[in-house]
Image 1: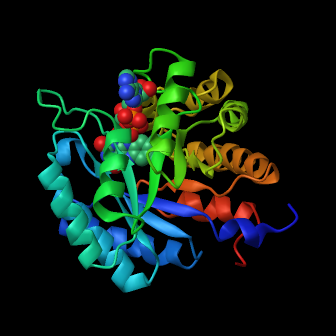
Image 2: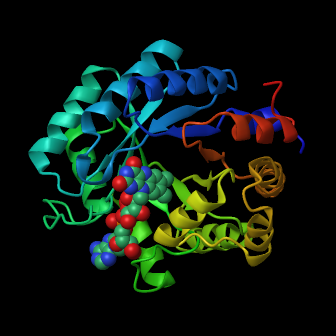
Length: 285
Ligand code: FAD
């Protein structure tokens, strides 16, 4: 890599809102460790159907106030009304938040009401109409195709609708095959999409959990990776060491090709991200 620090500026970390006081303390510890890497921003997820609305708000405000790092709430439109979203946006504006990740979200099982928005492009349009250029809006992108998309082309066109509605940047679903990402970005360029598309990076620390996530979100775990992870069984240390190697190599390839940044799905843990960071030689930033 020629200029590692140039990339480090634009890396970001994603957290989920803690459910207990103990989890909140653990998250503070994680954030303090990762904040030393000077990420461009940190984002906080939003539970399916709005189940974590208040916790997302509290966590975002705490990160920005305590660390000075820009914090971005995820806002999902599933089961939300325009009035709900308007109130949420106003609350974030009042706290000096200027960055959001706008998503459709997924319907929690048993919930029937989709709300007033059907797709994320409608949410992006609403945020722009309500708040002008106040927010830097990130949206989701799917190099391996969203699981509910009719086909890859339709998914790409739907992604473009979010950009046309006013998204400033995108973060991808995680993947372990960088060629899927490079091809996706090429296809976007051909369609005239020029916003930065940061790869989403999922460290590998727990095979059972990763398998479950990957099945639901359509991210492919390559066979050779899966076979090795299966072979390690309950040996968590071996899984972590192998996972750090695999994900470091993935990040290295992405950085060498000039990606606009890396967005780490931390799962509220710092260890794997720190190890990958160190391997990449970004630690001195
Ligand atoms: P959309 O862009 O609306 O797309 C959803 C599906 O609908 C796609 O298949 C798309 O092709 C299709 N589509 C879009 N527009 C149309 C249209 N006009 N007509 C027909 N089909 C259409 N989920 C959460 O609940 N909380 C989170 O905090 C969260 N954070 C995430 C962060 C990132 C970076 C990513 C990649 C995902 C995140 N998710 C989160 C998951 C996300 O909510 C799901 O993947 C969801 O299924 C799709 O959200 P979206 O914003 O991509 O939806």
